[in-house]
Length: 188
Image (cartoon, rainbow, N blue to C red; front, side, top):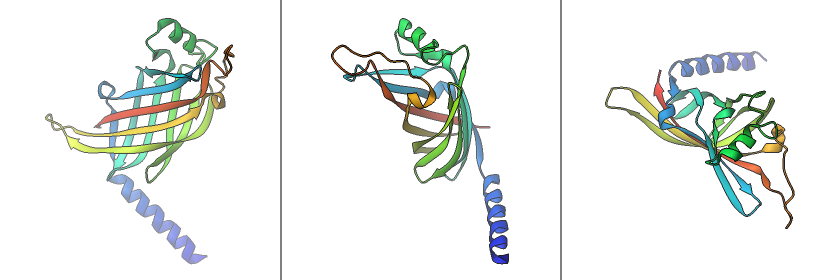
């Protein structure tokens, strides 16, 4: 029992010391993107993105120690204004009632980043695959880093249930939404 307590205390101190070496970054929205893809009529794919987002993260030797971000749902863009208005409506994101999506990382194990995603007022744990791009210092002596997160969610898990049967069989909108976050940050 005593050895377990000592090990717990030492682990806590070590983790605390490691987090002191973490570098805080702010997401550079001009060099980042939040994108998604979803099946349409089960035969093709619609791609889109959100232009309004922000985030911060801490990085220590290529490992994310923390990551959080917010996306403005009203900034959805698929390139078709009528479709974007429908996606902002109560049928999907209900952007007036739920103006933001939020993600807060809870852990990174190897190439897997897990966190809580809140969308449409519902919070669920999701896991993304991370591809670390590295760290560099730019011409203005600002430290930058980058990574890509990829994964998917079932939109119905978050209450985005609207759909329509297709006469030939199947549904108009797929349930699985593939997400790609391409992130570049500047050291705080």
